[in-house]
Amino acid sequence: MTTRRTPMVVLGTLVGLVAIGSFRASPAALSMTTTAPAPTSVTATSRTTPTSTNHSTTTPSAVRSQTGSTVNYNYGTLAVSVTVQGKTITNISVPSLNDGGNSYSQSLDSMSIPILTKEAMAAQSASIQSVSGASYTSAGFIQSLQSALTALGI
Amino acid sequence: MPTSTKPAKRPPLAGRATALPAGPRRGSGPAPMPRVADWFAWLGGLGLGASAAFALSQDSLHSVTSMAGFLDALGRLSGMVGTYLLLAMLLLMARIPWLERTIGQDRLTRWHRRIGTWPVVLITLHVVTLLFGYAAAAKTNVVNQAVTFIQHYPDMLMAFVGFGLLLLATAFSIPQIRRRLRYETWWTIHLAFYFAVALSFAHQVRTGVIFLGHPMNVAVWTRIFAAVASVLVLSRIVRPIMANLRFRLRVTSVEEVSPGVFAIVMRGRHLERLNVSGGQYFQWRFLAPGLLVHSHPYSLSALPSPPYLRMTVKSLGDQSSALAHLRPGTRVFIEGPYGVFTRHQITAPSVTLIGAGVGVTPLRALLEDLPDDIAVTVLLRASTIEDLVHADEVRALVEQRQGTFHTILGPRQRAPLDRTTLNKLAPRVRDSDVYVCGPAGFTDDVAKAAASLGVPTTRIHLEEFSF
Image 1: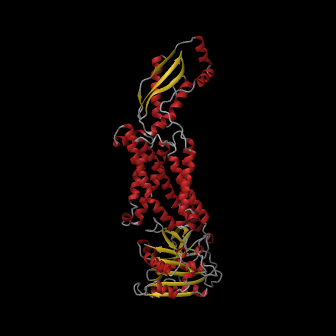
Image 2 (image 1 turned 90 degrees about the vertical axis):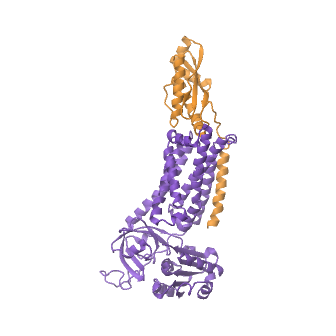
Image 3 (image 1 turned 30 degrees about the horizontal axis):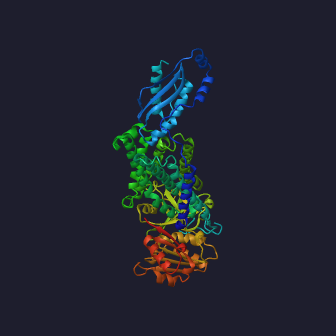
């Protein structure tokens, strides 16, 4: 019996390997630096917030950019850069991200930074919830973003 | 007991003190299900391959070219596969009924032991590679990295404690060390494996790259853990408790049937629902001082005769000596039946049953359970005639079937059960399924003798007892 079922286990293992292996042949690309969502979504955000649309049309201001302070967030360092038009945040990016180079913090960052960016764009401020499971990254992101906004006087 | 004429007030087993009252015997528990066991084997293999591929699903050729990336991928792979194998080992010992009645606990235990080294090797590799890999990426040393893990990574302290328990429990399972331990000590330490697995779970789903941001993967993996846990709780705790609430077994009598050999008769309710085949055994736990904590395996020495059950033990170990002094009325907790030493293994037109000393017990029950058209030869070995156990019962059952019955008496050296003796006393052995029960040395010798006479190994069925 033992000898009879061993091939089943071995063959099953190979089938399982191939099945899952080919199913996931192309893993999602992990980008180290995350840029803000495409401008279309910014427009969408603006459109859903009539006050800000109103505001930007009545007082059109220059486009300004500011990179926040570089924050040590336990796994590495990050700095958030923000672009505003008047008082409206139009772009958020993370130009400087040193995530310690290990797969854990890399995937944590690539998961959490897009969410944080989106939340901050929607809130138009740094008052956002941290991403669960990525509290260090969230705290670092919020801190750096806040410093950039403060520097811009927003 | 329809044919009994004994007055009701007398102990039901008086007269021939140890024999169970005549009456309808219950035997022939459910047959093995080889297909189901095949499915388990396939599924086990599929899961193993899938978990390995899954562990590497986030890696690309590029990511493993750096030293840190390579160690990282290796660490993830070894952790995933090691954990999978741990779960498989738990399931092999989960007393899953289909596996028990098809493969038998002996063989399941052998698989469990054969896999045994791998999880600890792989999980140690997991810990070492990730410590070095992460330390290399962060340009720090491994001690700092370990501190960082525990301080800053979610649930990592639990994982480290679990790893410690895994190492501890494994160390005490190394054969050379285990031999020096009392069974009870080993058993208690072995429980640490459950805690090790449980403690490791949280860090897997909260720091594992394949789980972060992949709620689907977390859901699947969580369900696998939950399923294993439920199977263990159901089949190792809930089912036995339910069964014993139904059966409510109590000791009725303890009789010395041969020097140092005791037949213990128990009485219970609904024993007709005990689906046991002759030759199977139960794990027995007597709710008496010194016997309460651990259960031990003994075969039934007769098919159940509701409301009675009987087992026969030799008082050698601490536990079996204590059994000799059991008081009538003592509650008995059973788990089982287990074992594939049953009529379901028969493929030949005849059987040869060979037992040494108290090894006769499963054969005695099997004899009652054999199909009518099977020719029977029984050989019993003992040092002296007094040491033959239940020989009268066996003789009567063999005569009833017009089979052949021999006893071989004398010290092992002078009266061996070798090839020549076997050929002379059981000339039909080649055409038989051979069932052997006795001490390990004895069963090995008889198995060799039978094989040398041309009995295929698939027809040689062994049941060893050790103390």
